[in-house]
Length: 575
Image 1 (cartoon, rainbow, N blue to C red):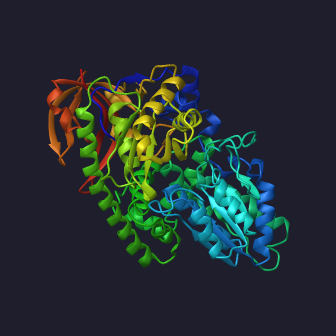
Image 2: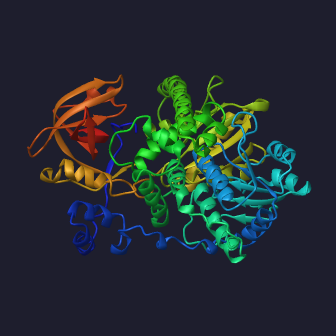
Image 3: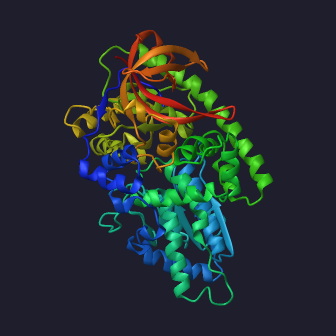
């Protein structure tokens, strides 16, 4: 996280005292009770039993999808999974392949597009590649809902298609045999926040129930425990930054429990072992340790390599593949650093005021890294951002990142409506989206998107404030509290980890690692000194006085075997 000097800190409304008291009686920790109450947690939501998961059969299209798949599977047909090239798609693909195989499918293959040549989704090019493998059924994961032409080509060739996806549909749905997507209009599934891997896991649960009802597991065939796949479901869910509503927290919590009990797939365990901290694995660990390394395969090379890492059952092979994924990630970081420097130079050359949406492009940029650059721009300048790099066929591929209160996919849809032909294709979520367009449209697109965003927000961009849980009594700021909060999640998008803010006395601020700040602080009311780290904040050092106002998260820092309290700083301002 890039620390901001000027990003405002806004305190959450204090939750009712009665809600805190009800939670505190069960938790025995008033701080955690206050945090949970501020996020709307009720006493019956303190645990994550699997019987609280929403029912798979409430997803529309599930009956048709599982009936078709069961017929092909039990008839010995060939199944082909078509995945996306990000971490959600890769984990969803691995869950699909592993799940279908243990359910008894004889032949299960997969196909993942290239980010650099074929682009996102089940395109015409991907459809031709799928047809060449002669499957009886194509099942998509984390894509397909907007792949009208590719799916039409498969159907024309006599191949049945089941779409499992979680992206927003367009005005027209693909001509698939069945579609499973909680975001379909009128779909009754209570949660709209499943990741692509979550939709696939639900599909497998429903398929197992269908096969059970059909007697598939009676002839000495074992009925598999699909919960063994939940470590991959957890990784894909947190890596795709979908909101962690209660249902998603159940999925993630059980995936983490398996990893912390020594289970999980060898490939994921090998990724996590690359820089183990010795602390329990949390959703944050998955998001920042395993997620980027897995994503790096699709960004820098071929996501098939990442999928194979998740599919191998041999620990030695998993270790070697994890090392290669780590090498891809180091390469990605080097490319990102150069692109970030160029983006920063571009922004510094702009005159005030900044446009409502930041749209940057560079002919030397890497198309696999533009999403990260867009995210960095959004963090630093508190505006939606789109970064473009050259793609195939003379087009430019852009990746957009937004902030709360701006639905970036809807803004792109508005541009496409008012300027037909400007955007070749697009898709995504409220907070992130992708698109392609021709070079001659880049300047006009930036203006059109800025207009669409302001129209959506009533002419005023929302304030990108950090939401704090308020001040914390320094007597409560202990190593034990940091440990308790650390493991009390799973924390993530829509269920933010505890964040506190207050004024501190600044005793020391030194630059470490090139662009980070190591701080030594004490609370304004006194007390013991505590160390803090502010990532990518070295340029803020000269603006700091003797007292600072910080937003921070208590964390456990393990150094040379010793565990210490440390504050992770997310906003740093003069007092």
